[in-house]
Image 1 (cartoon, rainbow, N blue to C red):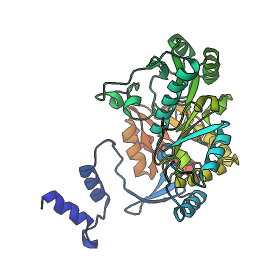
Image 2: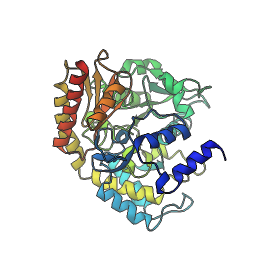
Image 3: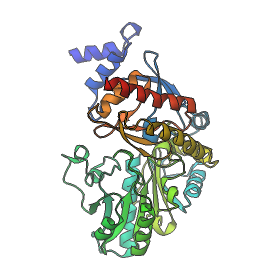
Image 4: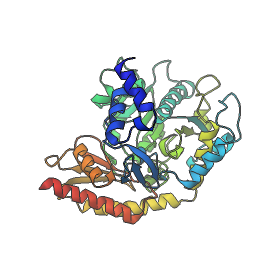
Amino acid sequence: MTTTDQTDRAYRGGAEHRMTGTDDFIELSERRSAHNYHPLPIVIREARGAWVVDVEGRRFLDCLSGYSSLNFGHGNPKIIAAAQEQLSRLTLTSRAFFHDQFASFAAGLGDLTGKDMVLPMNTGAEAVETAIKVARKWGYEVKRVAADQANIIVMEDNFHGRTTTIVGFSTDPDARGGFGPYTPGFRVVKYGSVEAIREAVDANTVAVLLEPIQGEAGVLVPPDGYLTQVRELCTAENILMIADEIQSGLGRTGETFACDHEGVVPDIYVLGKALGGGVVPVSAITANEDVLGVIRPGQHGSTFGGNPLACAVANAVIEMLGTGEYQARARELGEVMHQRLRGLIGHGVVTVRGRGLWAGVDIDPSLASGREVSKALMAHGVLAKDTHGSTIRLAPPIVVSEEDLVWAVDQLGAVLTELAR
C-alpha cells in the first residue's frame, strides 16, 4: 500500500482518524483535486439563511451567495420542502418520458419570462451553449443565412462559462489561454457600445449575446439606454437578442431580470444559478415558438435536463418570485447597501458599481488586492470574493436582514481602516 493510500484510508477511517480541523480538510482537498479554483481558507459545514458555519463552529455572513445561486438563502424552507417531497417520490425519468412536474415548470418559467417555450438544461454554461445552438439553427432556417456562415456578436470581458466554445470568445487570458483551437463564428466588441455592435453586424449575423450586467468582470453596469438601443438594433437588423441573466436574473438586481430596468425583453433569456434554489443545478433558455420551434427531437438535449427534482425545486423558486416580494426586498436592501458602500469611497474604496443586492467594489490597489481584502473580511466574519485585481463582489442572499447587511459593510470599513495603518 502506498503512503498516499494509507493517508487517505486514515482520513476515511474511524473517529480517531477523521479530519477535525480546517487544515486537514484543505490539505486533502488540495492534494486530491484539480486546482481549478483558488478558494479562501474556510471549510463550511452547514448553513441557514444568510449565515454559514465552518467545521470549527465559527459563523460567517455569506455575501457571495454562490455567485447568485443562493438568492433565497441557504436551506430556504419552501425550497427544501419542495425538494424533500419530490425526493420521496421521483428524481429522474430522463426526457424519454413525461413526468408530473415538467408541465408546471415549463408553463411557469414561460409565464415568468413572458415566453412561449422553455428548453431546460442543468448548468449555466449548458444553457449558454443551448442559446448558441438555437440562434445558429434559427439563423439558417428562419433568417436564411448561408450554411456554416452564421456569426454571433459577443462582448469584451464577458463571462458565460468555461466550455471550449465559450472560452474561445472570452477575453480573459486565464479562461481562454491554452484551450484552442477555438470555435469560429464569434465577433467580440466593446461592452456598452451600441455603435461597436452596429459596426460588427453583417448579413450573416444571427444574434447578439450579452450580460445585462457583467458579473465576473466586476459587476459592470452598462450606460443608461444601452440595452434599449441593443434591442432596437436587433429588431431592425433581424437579429436575436440573447440576455445571459444567469447571475443577474431572478431577483438579484431588484427586478425579476436585469433587463427589466430598461423595460427590455430579449428574444432569448438564459437562466441558471438561482433557478435551482441552491439545491440542484437547474438552467434553461426561454423564447417564443418562432425561435425555439426550430429545435426538433434528436437535435439537442440532456439526460438530467428538466428532471423531476430540478423541476420541483424550480417550481418553488418561480412561485416565490411570482409574489414580487424578493424583487422588492433586493431593491430596498440594495439601496441601503450601496449608500453605505459609497460612504467608503475615499476611505480605501475607489468606486462602487451595481444594482440591487449586487455590488462590485474597487479597492485602492495601493492598499490591497481583492483577495487580501476578502481574506481580511473572512477574519471579520464576512465571506466575499475577489474578481480581477483589487475588485471584490458583494451579493448577499436576498433574505439577509438589514441589520446584518449594515454590519457586513461596516466590517469592510473596519478592514480598510486596518489595512491603511
